[in-house]
Image (cartoon, rainbow, N blue to C red; front, side, top):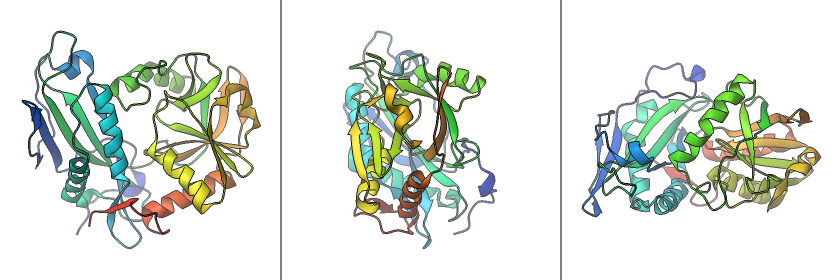
Length: 336
């Protein structure tokens, strides 16, 4: 297979249109058979539910070229399960989980020339998403939906790759108690756009949100979960309004089973963040980005950046993804 002629090492985290994508439509109470198409544009009513009431959810995962030359995806079954949870919460029809995985495989395989080579530092980002497509003017769920999967080659999520990032404690809230913070709904991300632009204008890489009920606990950022390390212990915030990150879930397993670390999932008080030695942002897009500084309204908490703990976690998880380290059963979906 001959890959596309791309400067893989200088890719940013931006959309690049690839050759094929997967589409399936829900109508009259059922999903159709779905198919691959070369049509990247979507035509819909001006009154489509997604445009009026933001009825949409999405997922994000990656395809890689492993050390032995295989193209693989990392734990797509968990993305399928999480999208099913999102759909239920947003009153959308669940796209069958087995078909979700098949759609991802088909789309990646059809765009195999766009999968970056091993060692390039780039990956193929896979974006499954679903939206209400028919005209809805009253406030109610759509009756027709479209499920799609597209892929795009990407470089690091944060400019500079794994360099330590600077984040701030936000005055705004990401999610309400008993709201939709735990599902991957497009509306959650729309809520954070004003704040992330402001953060960038103020010189920060991201916002750290605290719980909106008491404002005493760390939750997550607009686009990633947070991890902390003290000694040999990995600590991750626990809350009903945090999106359950597949990367975070995988890191917890790696920490315990591969690195013999202690693991704690618990509420993390804002008042204790200065006690930790290392901190990082974790998610599909970034894997792990070490935090250098958290700014809490002028009080600066500094961390080791890419310290020993963050480095070992990063090296082990990416080693599993890239085929350098043996993966737990079921973690790697071989595409070709």
